[in-house]
Image 1: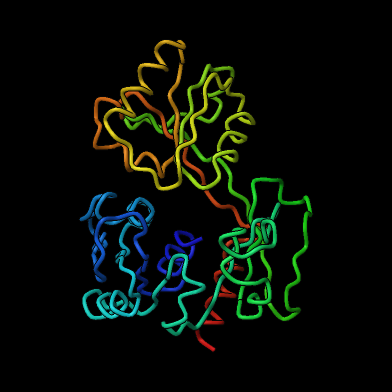
Image 2: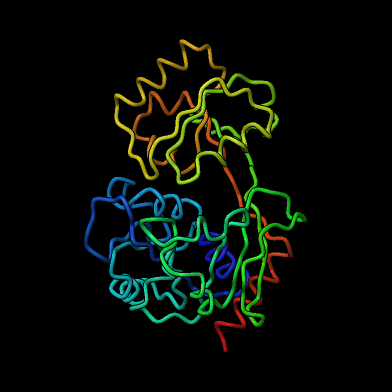
Length: 289
């Protein structure tokens, strides 16, 4: 949603957005770290975190700045890049910085997890916090027309639906774009370090891949040389026809070029249930109120 919002505002409504992210997992602990100046990516995943680098790669022409203090990062984005819209990634609880619009994403399958707050469950706030939301987007990998759990949402809050869907496969060695049916019937060794690895596995299975091995590392995991050597060795032993991972993992594996050239990367996109312009028009109207 961060990528869709930033790109959409820039292209459709002539705003000058910048993306602000905490930079979770990166070793830089200060604020105001320029991951991208809108021209090129300036920091590595190890420095800035994997997700900010992935966002930077997906939002050409848009600055990306990280740091735990979004006020400091936002001030830099305004002064240095002339940003007039700051898109905060994962910041509903970051109450220090005033925001004009709060967009909340809810997993359609389990919008509130087990209903418990951290550390007993996944929630950072009770469900009543949805009263602060200006837009709610229900997401999932299920078909758009299939209704699931209906969380209590204020009647006046616009609700959109979207689903994550596979877009294409990228070959690490040649950067060649492969069609999704390239996975059909292939013996696949899959691995990932994301928050919901089962969804990645389900997507591969739905594309017809025969998964002979699936490794799930912790979310935001930074691979070591021993890891990639072990993965490559086991894939060879199992006669895997493809080594596949996610884009989020791919940005962290690029430094292991000998290994990176052996893998393929599944790119996933977000598809709105309505015309994307409807969502952007709603957002723009809220920004200008």
